[in-house]
Image (tube, rainbow, N blue to C red; front, side, top):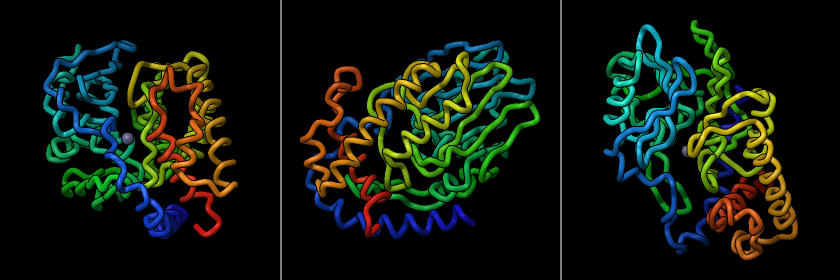
Length: 315
Ligand SMILES: [Zn+2]
């Protein structure tokens, strides 16, 4: 019930900030968005073996996919975009011990993660997601900042095993909700205890500034909270698979959590002084990190808008 209340509250918040966000609609579209459909999706998959049965599969233009080969087929954490789904299925079939997919985790609702849902659903296999992810996949979403529209998935492609807090497969694989709203309000992790590998989707970005999707609940405070939470799940030897970029360690996540904590403080200070998103962008609150992370303007604007959603007194 708490989660349903949160959903209702967010609808109200969205309505409240929708008008304010309209100010930035004249800005150029998010041309550098990593959420753009991967044009290079027909490229050849690369695989990195993390253990006997775990493989990081990367297809050009697609986000990371973690594949576990088991006696009964393959478990996937995320399923590429619709454009990359065929290449992914070919890649996981060709893995040593590979085969048909029996379980697919959606770390969140974004199309970069859910493009294989339809094929897996039609095959009658399990699609596991947090309840909020299922809700987003069963409704149309429009991003207020660039009017990008996302159609709901057909019923057969929607998660058929949703959960609220956590769960465990018979194989011992553990999964759980990351309730901080780091990227969306439906983020999940999948932990493979025997291999000590933790897949976290876009809660961690291993490559450039993340998308702050406040339309579906994500916010800069959630990034900080999510990164702190992951440090309680992972240990020093855990290999952490982010949605994008190379495999990370606990030390990498700790470093990121400090960086986002600092940026959060700077933005919150500006919010408290009555500043707006454009002033926040001009203040360059990410400047000492941009050489490593890339231009932070879009990230700062979305992050600031996300503060409106969560911290504004009238929100
Ligand atoms: Zn995402």
